[in-house]
Length: 265
Image (cartoon, rainbow, N blue to C red; front, side, top):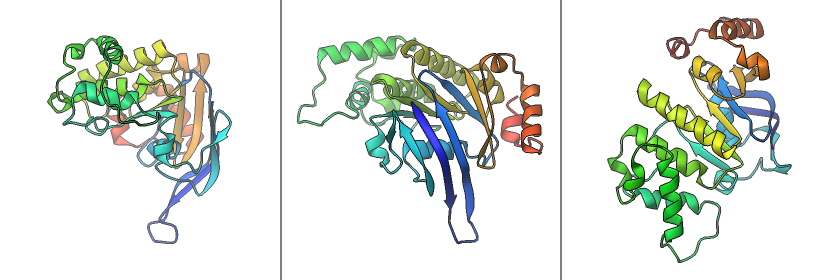
């Protein structure tokens, strides 16, 4: 479904701040894959997601979705293919708009715009159904401004919005990192439930090794802009954090020294 071929991306070329962010990255994501991506700071995790989403244009290489080359396609034109949930709960929603208005914008993603803005009763039934699945009571608050919701509620709403018109690929960029542990666990469980229910192809960047191991059917580890580990199937099911650390050290020739990851173990 999604194919990344020999992607290279260098920031600030020719300056003292030049940095190779991605180096010859090649990877395929099959339909229904729920892949978690782990790595230390500067490993290239979020940069890879941004390249897929069209925020950054690579210096070389190509990105294919269903065989179509979208490498040069701008991010707003890629919206028809991707749903995305960001780390900051404030980024995925419009605070001054109602819950149902936010959902309506998501529902119309990738569709031709018209002068008709009204939300039909059939649409509203869909919104109620999808919000009911969250179990957070939001289905009875369609007329509430999103700015009155908690961070966890907003992130859960963003998750519904990102998957409302089922995308080719759901991109999750450390979407629980800004939440407290209890709320993060709730949002992760909701994430897994939505992905499984709608059989979404999903890529989740996380700084938490336990979450990377516990969720999804595949785990990718990045280091210094490269993919150094790609584990799936029974190998992933049998994986423990200690095993993953040892595998990282063998593959990279270095110790895993990112405090933000190690303190989450």
